Image (tube, rainbow over all chains, first blue to last red; front, side, top):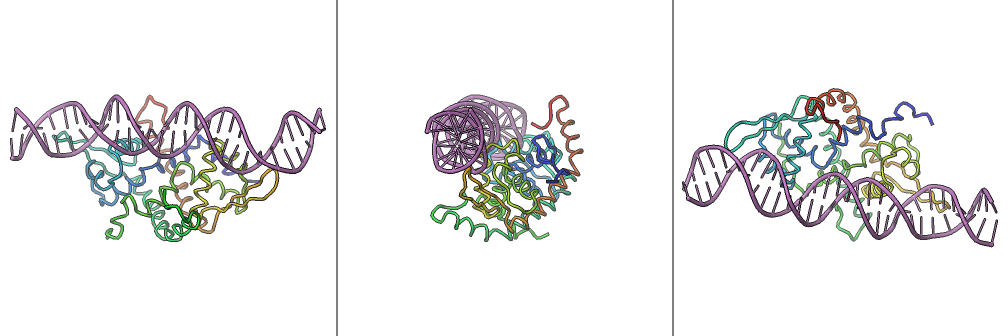
Length: 129
Length: 129
DNA sequence: ATCATTAGTTACATAAAGTATCTTGGTTTC
DNA sequence: GAAACCAAGATACTTTATGTAACTAATGAT
């Protein structure tokens, strides 16, 4: 019964939990991944929307603002008309990306087996939702 | 870098997106982490609840069932009274855990800097929510 | 003069998660 | 021998998160 070293890691106010819960929300990882795909150059709001066709405008805004608050992305406004706002990843996020990509790689390797398990779990249902 | 191979990874019906969105929901990673902390032995429902004090009974049930469907945990019911149901991680999840732990490690390393950024972003507000 | 443009904001509607109460059937307590 | 208790849920109801649709601003093109 000696797990005293990480005993508090699971507590509701744990900062690690807090950081990961904001990162592992519905859209953050995907937005980071998409910004990374652009190859270290800034990306406009509209372009992000195009690359993530199923995100709502509202949630893209909210997600980007949260990512900015936590220092994952920078937001640069150019005083033009029509407006131009560019988003880019920070150095912090580049240090995180290998871990995200590791997750993606793992998912790619395991997707067939996982989908198989889903079918076994509910043979009639359409798996996935 | 040649990213054409993952060009479609961002599409709504991408299986990788699907897998990661189910894994990176509000509770799944934390439940997996908590089961892992138990050290490769099965854990009862009630014990999980104790270790994650802020998860609701309903969401613990739902999360565990989804994890079971995708083959991350096994569920063993012992026909006793009061009921005993034990959950354990599968081999699949053990292959995933290093990546989860890498994320946790990254969060631990970066938490101070991130919290600093949050304070800068909204100096008056209580950061975190 | 009207329309199209981008990056939003806002009001309203739906989906996801949280809360509280109920169930089950043996075992202990009174 | 009836009442209360236990673990693992299920269910109805409430709150929060997310989605949808309409609106705004300033300018250039038609």
